[in-house]
Length: 399
Image 1 (cartoon, rainbow, N blue to C red):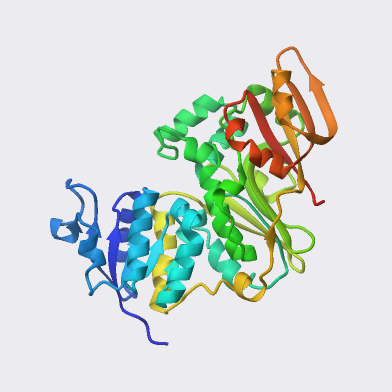
Image 2 (cartoon, one colour):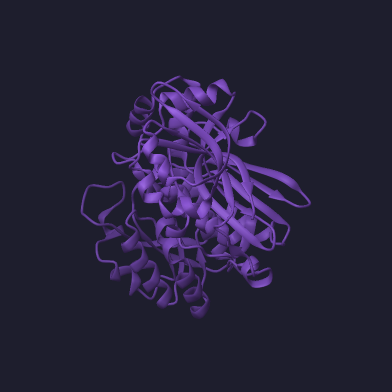
């Protein structure tokens, strides 16, 4: 097969953009030229000034550039760039999980209409090639679930809490100092980053595009010493986990929640800024993928993988949607949760179907039982404002 010569227009030259440029220089066999790099402002950089431009159209309207690599933080600006690039008939590689999750149906349709490639391996789990594997290796209808630690920042914090006995505040500050968490860490610790990645993985797992607002995501920012001690006494660690699971009758359920994880689970030993994904199937049982989920070079290597694939005219076929379609997102199933609270008044918001364990103490109380997922989705924005902590036990019921 003849390799396609790629002339790149790169948007963004931050940690990932520079990481990509570094790994491109180390891949001389790749027939790629970076024509221009679009950035927001003029500052002294590691490359000569003539590489840079400041108007997106300097790249988007350049006919010599046949491939756009979008590596910016702002999801709205990324959407404008990616959509216009596709309309112009250019291939696109993107790492912006929020932009993709919120606009996936439109962008996939547009790429098909314009007969170009839209690739985004780096949007899901950094250096772990999970999307390509779901597309190429797990491309049949035997898939049962995809479960994983999808966010390196929250996992770093939880690792320090459980392995180094740090408080949440201490671990968060350390993660911020090391650049693993932003000054406003909500995107990571409240489960939004994991949510957007899970939306993308769900499309490649079961061929279903689910609007992010319809999915429960709840993070770790309300974790207390009581919750940490409860987990330790039971022999668990707490991990922030995203999961999409196949139920009966071609129904799927998905959510992002802290979870009590026992030592016999693969993700129990995934620490620091690493990600870990468990793919479960009918014939192959469980397979585990592990790697760095963040950082310039790990993410840059995933972007490079997409660029290399483009050189061979690779495209996602969306096999689950095309050949094994018909899956439906089902919110009426129930999941077992641990709810820690201090004021019994908040219980009016939680309709437990059954309770298996409860405790009442001088300061904190908890209940463990099954709640319908749709009832939690209805109050998901309110959950973050309550003096509670919510975690999954790992049990799911399909009604």
